Image 1 (tube, helix red, strand yellow):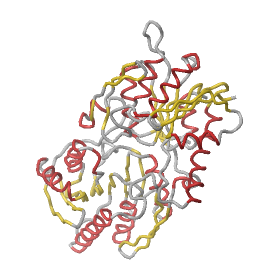
Image 2 (cartoon, helix red, strand yellow):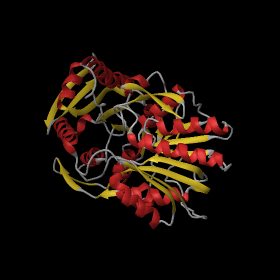
Image 3 (spheres, rainbow, N blue to C red):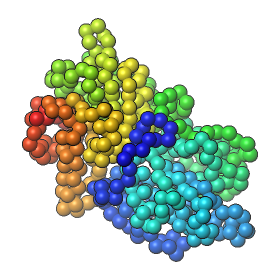
Image 4 (cartoon, rainbow, N blue to C red):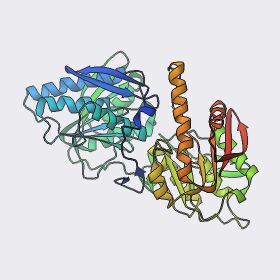
Length: 461
C-alpha cells in the first residue's frame, strides 16, 4: 500500500520492520526518568554512535519543565512536535514521560525529518519501545511541516545547525507562531549558535522564558505572541516561491558542452556544483547516445541531489530544433528537500510532468515507483547514497556492503523493462564492487571515471 503525502504528489513508503535491519548499525540502551529504552541507530542519520549530548541536555530541561508544570497543576502538553527527529529519541522519550505523568488519552506526537530513513527508523524505534502509532507518528517533511490547522502545546528540537541561517531564523519565528496559547518551544543548539538564536527570538517578538548553557550546548525555552498566524511549511510545486529563504545559490555550469542553470536550496543533498558522479554519468550517456533512451517512456532518476543531472538530461534529450521531449520524469530519494530542489529545477526546464517518490532505496520504493511511472522504465539513472561503514568491524562492513549493493541489483528486474538501460554512478571503489556483483541478465555497456567517481551503464536482458 502507498499513501499520499498530506500536501502534494510526493509519495512515501509504509514502514516495514523486516527491511529496517539493512539500515541499522547498533542498538544502544538509554534511561530517562527511570524508564529504560533501547534505540536502534543508523550510520545514515545524526548521532549514530549513541544518544548525543545535545539531546540529553534538551531532555533534562524538558523533564524539569514537565515536573514544574505538574507541580503547579498547569495543563500538560498533549499535542507535541519533534522537529528534526533523527532516530526518534526525543519524541519517544517525551511521549513516554508525558504518558507516565498524565496518561495517554489525547496525547499525540508528530515526529518530522527531511530524511525518509529517519521516518522509518523513528517508527521502528517507537514500536520497539512500545509507543503506539496512535500516540506517535513520523513524517518525512521540512522543519515545521504539517497540517495547516495544527497548533502545538510543545515543540521540541535538537536544531540541525547546518540547515542554513535563513532557514534557522525562519524556524524561530514560525515555531513561536505555531504554538497554542501558553505553548512553548524547547530548543537545544550548539553554543556557537547561542547568540544567533537569542537574537532571533528577540527579533521575532517571542518571549524568552529561560536559557541554560552547558559545556557544548545551550537550551532555549520560548513562546510566541498571542494571535500569531504563520502556517506550517508545505512541500509541493512552488516550494521556493513560497519559502524563498530556502534558496542557497543560483549556479550556472557547463556539463558536456551543455550549459545548466539551477537554483540550489538549503538542506538538499549535494553542493552548488555537479560533482564527479554527475560528470561521469553525463559523459557516459554522451558516449552511448540518445538512441539508447526511447522517447515517450517515463525516466527515473534516483537520488537526484539538487538536480544537476536531471536538468542536464532534459537538455541532452532535446531534438535538433531544441524542443524538449515530453517525457514524464520520476524522481526518488531519501531527502524531501532534495526532491523539492530537483523537481523545481526540472520544472523550469521541461514541460513534462515531474513526480516525486520518497524512498531510501530502489528496492524499498519499488511499488510506489511503478505506480508513479505507470509501469516499468526504459531508463533508470541512480546516484546511490551508500551508508558509511567506518566504525564497523570487517565482518559487519562486508555484510552491509553486500546488502546495500545487492539491494540495488535486486530492485532492478521489476523496475526495468526488457531492453532497458540502467546507469549507476558511485565512488570508484564502490562501483568496482557493484560491478562484481552483477547478476545474470545484465550486460555492461561501458563505464567512465571522473574525479574519483565511476559511472557504469548496463542493458537489461
